[in-house]
Length: 637
Ligand code: WT7
Image (cartoon, rainbow, N blue to C red; front, side):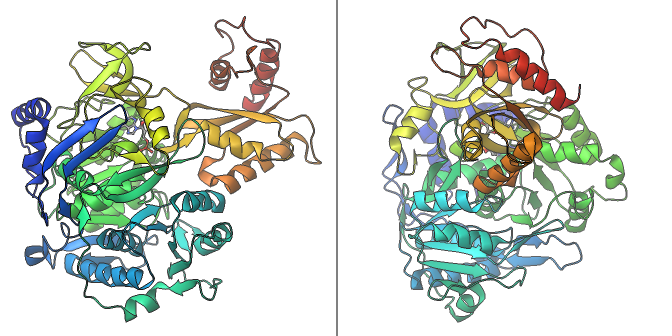
């Protein structure tokens, strides 16, 4: 088990050690895992190519560090508690032993369908136990999993499958989310129509609805699992062999497939999980994220299971059948640590405190948040009403790229401050730079957040495009990893994350590139051009505001275009990326060089009516009045 820090003095001491002697520090942590062969060199790196390698020439399998390592004393302990969407359906508990049996069987299923070490397996599933089983089976045989969130459209799924070159897809007949049934297989079928690389699809049964099974391609999970042998020896992996690819949005172009490798990711997620949440043996830990996002990968699945924890996985949504669903789960399973997103907290807060009444939340010890800045009001509500003033809140800042938590309190150890992620994790060296790349030393400074030194959990490349990896993260400020976030270091040296400084927006904790939404909108035949910006939204954090240039309308007029723009975005990306506001315009404010002046669009979306700054470089300054008029009508004021 990785060591656990238990005092503030311990944190300060260990943090110093991790910065002055990072390789010594991480050697010590890595020693607590099971290696087939230990590494020769702890770290080799440069941020110019960039090239980052940890635990060089080490040999291991991450699933041996979950199963074989724990089996003697944890075989009968619950590994995963699966809570279904419908509270009237029975929950399922998989002990470490039972989960291991199913993972080994599914490993054999994958092998018998020709999946080899290094092959990519795409996973498009609802939140059912077969999802983590499929991921762990991939890891066990050395296949690289690429999980695509079940809310993405066929188009997005097929782009991701093709980019990764996946040969096998694991999916399900359908999924439940609140009162809705999602036709997962139908969407997967449409995606597979456009990707010839997928030879086999394995379909888990969840809803029991009639689905189209293509002969020679589609197979039922349960038939295969039943026939499979439970004997399987894990593949030997190199420390730097890829473990998974996970796609995320950037400020330009299509989604990027971030690549995480085996050993560094394992060491980092296990260490941060145990220390941030202060997990103790026997605790029940509940992370509400979907496994399709990095939070689900690192802190629903890998971090907890590598710690021998019991992790609770919930299929449904916080507001169905009512807004007390999370608290009912906490009460029913006696949850000790609960990790969710600010957007969920804000939406539950808005629905009233009565949903907490009668729920016994006394088991809770730690509350966590992730994915977007948490406003003070939401922080206090969470602290006072959910945590009853007894539970520390860990506001954890990190990214798909970082693999694990980077800046966060250690629960109960680092004193918290509402809306501050507080202090860096062991081995993390944050710096704040001004627009010219000059480092701002000392406290009470604000600027662009960068990281100075590699940490084991960081992504190593973008799948198939190392140049893009360098250009995106290592070229803005040479010698530093650039996060894309703005941050402030206050008078106490505490970090507060201010949000993205690039064209990425964060909507209900979902990360979206404005360019990808624009591309989707531009797919509409009557749209000439569009520009998307974020605006402050009381529940979602940021809402999506789309300016759509359109001069010719079909029969439905402006309203008709609005509706079909929303449909287009659903089709190209997924329903969660639909704009909150669509303003139809005749043009966009552009400079003489043809650049859209987004600053003006942001201000108008924020309901500001003047102070547009210098507009002398605008080619068409008269457009501002039209935009303001239209915005007024749209907002009804
Ligand atoms: C972006 C990364 C990390 C897992 C989920 C999101 C924002 C994340 C916080 C926080 C303020 C946060 C940042 C970051 N973000 N956590 N605690 N406070 N902002 O992963 O989809 O890769 O998004 O989420 O802007 O860059 P992601």
